[in-house]
Each structure stands twice: as structure tokens, then as C-alpha cells.
Length: 110
Length: 238
Image 1 (cartoon, each protein chain N blue to C red):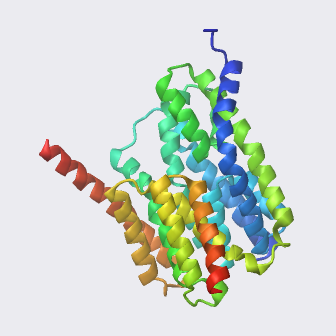
Image 2 (image 1 turned 30 degrees about the horizontal axis):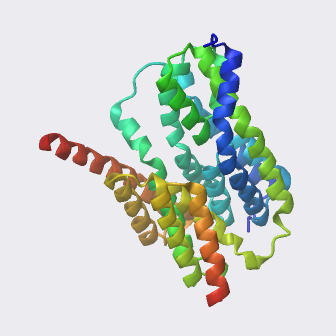
Image 3 (image 1 turned 30 degrees about the vertical axis):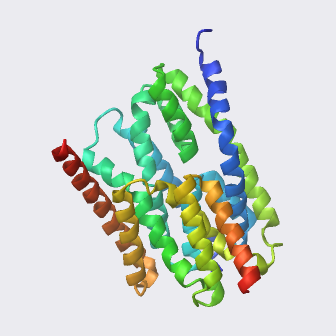
């Protein structure tokens, strides 16, 4: 549960919105048609795969909903989402595969 | 073939954006549900979707806020998720850079994975003036953004009525895995992802979710380094 005041939450929303806009505006608005160093672009390309797996790994191994205890149903669901995503390259198919596996496993294993 | 005008470009962009409704609607609904479940009110949930308009970063922020991470960590981690958009911005500059500043600012607001994907494909195949490209881009945004807001609203309105048996806590991990899996298209991407996972698990003891920032800061150069190494190996093999 989020335990922040309304002001703190709105501060995060507004700053995140402004920061995200500046990232989007960076080249097209400010840098114009000047060239960027290649190594910067290369690092930027790896930002999503460097952040998102690390964000979810602890949530998958130690889910807060089970009090941090590793849950076979959630592990199976995570594996299913990953495998379906790798095979189909389709985000929606992967979400669907993970969700179906989660519900099936929760129903069977409990 | 009739002459291309900004108006016809707009509607071509709109049609190009339509297939992405299939992604946007469930994703936006899910954010509405998860945000409400985490304790945000409907205006705050909508505030995220209107002002940030970036699903993965929104989920990241809500997750870290639920874990009581400090504001600085919430912001820097969510912005790190959005760093890929600097790349989009750079890639679109040759095609839209000559448009007036206000048009470029408007396009920046709507620069999301889906509008970028549609527009970049089109611009690479057809060389047109910047004005028409901006119109095309805004047309794609017009197919996607309104439904993003609407889906968020529907999810937020339904959110608190969903019982715990639905295990919605796991919607975020599954969604993120589903986004990341198709990105793992080379050894370099896998190396970055594995580095990120291993370090974030090893550093989970660090306060304020700082371990994730460290993991990401190491994983980015690891991915870049492996890519450089692979390119060098390929070049020497030729």
C-alpha cells in the first residue's frame, strides 16, 4: 500500500511527467540535428533490459502478497510469461500465458 | 496516387496506430486497477496516465511507492525505465526536426513505444517533408492516446472491487516479464538482463531500493560491452 500524502503523490506524478517529457524532447527539441556520440546511444538502448528484470526479480522470488515466501504458482506463472514472450515476441500473448498459468496453478496447488 | 497532404498523412498515421489498441486497452486498464489497488485515488491514477503517459514507468513508480521507496529513488528508477525514449527522440529527429517547435513539443508528449514504432517504420520507407511526418505521428497518437486515458479510467473505476483471489499483485511482474522477453533478441540483451537480475537480488538488502539503481547502472555497460565484443568478433570472422 502507498502511504504517502496526496501532495507527495502529486509531486511524484508532476516531476515524473516533466522528466519524461524532457527525455522525449531531448533530441528532437533541444539537440536538433547534431549527432550524438555512438556510445551514449548504445547505452540508452540497453536501459529497459537493465532496469525491468532487476525490478521484478525480487517480486517473483519473494512476493509481498505471500509475506515474502516463495510461491510455486507465481514462479510457474513468471516462467510461462517469459517463455511465451521469448517464443512469440508478443507482449499480450505473454501476459495472457502468465495469467492463465497463474490462475491454473493457484487453483491446482492452492 | 493522390498528392500527400498533412491531412491525408494524419489519417494514414491514425490507421497505422489502430492495431496497437489491442495492447493499449488491456495495459491501461491494468494500470488503473493496480494503481487503485495500491491506494491511489482516481485523479492520481489518471494524473499518471495523462502527465506521464508511459506505462512501464508508471507501473515502476507505483510499485516503488508501495514499497515505501523515497521519492528520489521512485523518480530516478522510473525515469531510467524511460531513458529508451531519448533514443526514440534521436531517431525521429531527422524526420521531424525541421517542424516548428510547438509541433515538436506536441509530438514529444505523445512519444510512446507504439507511436514511435509506427512512425519510424513509415519514415524510413517514405521520405516526406517534416510537416507531413508530424501530422502522421499525431494521427497515430490520436488512435492510441485517448484509449489509454479511457482504459486507465475504466480500470481505476473497477479496481477496488476486484477480490484478492485474483492475485492482482502479480500483474506487474507478469506484465514486465512480458514486455522484456521480446526485447531479449541478442546475447548482449540477455547479458544485461541477467546482470540486472543477479545484482538486484544480491543487493536487495540495500535501503530504499538503491540496489536496483546499482544493478541497472552496471547492467547497461555490460550489455553495451558484450555487444561491442560480438561486433568485433563478427567483423574479424568476415
